[in-house]
Length: 209
Image (cartoon, rainbow, N blue to C red; front, side, top):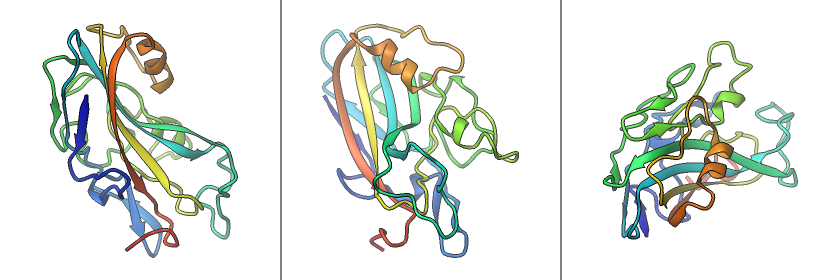
């Protein structure tokens, strides 16, 4: 199975139009266009009954004490964990494309609703936890919300855009299910997978431009 993420080449930076946060010289970060990229996939195996689409960052610091703190840096030596940015399950087997901007077109304070979306069933991403302490932004974030790594992180972050072909019509998930629940539910049902990985940073010392 193959996947293309329009505008993102393997190993290259994710364009700012797909980001939740963009570099701002005065304030380090400002909100980005936060559009989901167009995904197109093909050559799903025979017997495919549904798809799972996910995007996650495996480079998120497991300890957030120094994240986005003036005069501090997030050490490259801190253990890293997965941060889910996009979870769609029960995507019909007849689907092979998600248009740009279909699942997200802008930052929505307090998040988008989980459950049925334009395509498939939306799971809850980790901005739900990350923004929980911000009274202006706290809420349940479902569907796509793009990259916004710590602006003081010493490492470049990687973003895995994946599609998984499954042998079941539905994973039976409902409510505010998260990435761990999706991975557990699809275990043993994956017929094929495909991935494109882009990079992103808000640290001016790591940026190429």
